[in-house]
Image 1 (cartoon, helix red, strand yellow):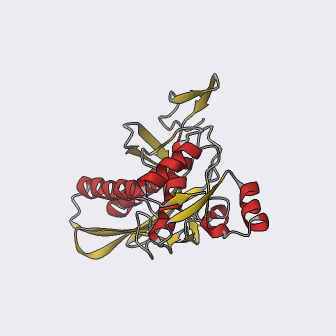
Image 2 (cartoon, rainbow, N blue to C red):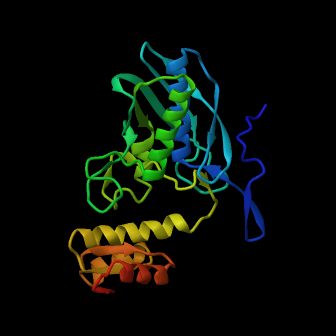
Image 3 (cartoon, rainbow, N blue to C red):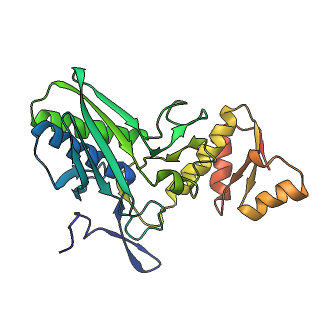
Amino acid sequence: MEHKTGLEDFYVIKNNKKLRMGYTTGSCAAGAAKGAAEMVLSGSIIREISLMTPKGILLHLELHDITMEANSVTCAVRKQAGDDPDTTDGVLVYAKVERISGKRDWIVDGGIGVGRVTKPGLSQKVGEAAINPVPRSMICRALEEAADKYQYEGNLKVTISVPDGEKIASKTFNPRLGIKGGISILGTSGIVEPMSEQALTQTIFLEMKMLRDEGHRYCYLTPGNYGNDFLRQTLGYDQELAVKCSNYIGDAIDDGVRLKMDGLL
């Protein structure tokens, strides 16, 4: 019998086709953290956890690969991207939750397969795990709910990991954004809307912002790989100063204005 996630009735229409929605790596991380926290505090195995997303959709997430130890529990949630062509679809996102000494507080970090920030300009500081602000707050809220449920006043540490993350990251924008060693834990709504333009336009803005934060006042816009090759081979320009903008040339110019760049080519 197929597991019901709560997304069965949610879809978007693109080109007269119904496309199923999915849920983000941020929702996976928060769901796994909530499940692991409840298990470490109750001492009982849990096979499914409910998670309210920022979009207001309640998810019912199956917990996989559960490992219980004296003061910690590890479990995973499998990413479902719906009908979105997402490189992380099907991966397991793990959370290890540990009881640690100290008053109630939540420590969130990344483990294997979660990238580390190496350049300024992102929402995380250099050296921090690439867990974006909304997923981080979802994870903390999940720990808070588990602690309240079991009247626990101590400290919890959660480590998010994605065993396949480093391999997957090579197919994403992460290397260009200076995120090394794995994927980012993403999502502003907790839900994946298929064929969304927002993720791409946000990446264009981030790439340009990082160049500006490094002190560059000009950059090049290219539609894709052919444009990058032309910059390097024919014009002899520095490819590191190029931002791929696909068909979103107007958005990229707007980004340049927002960031007060001196010029774009």
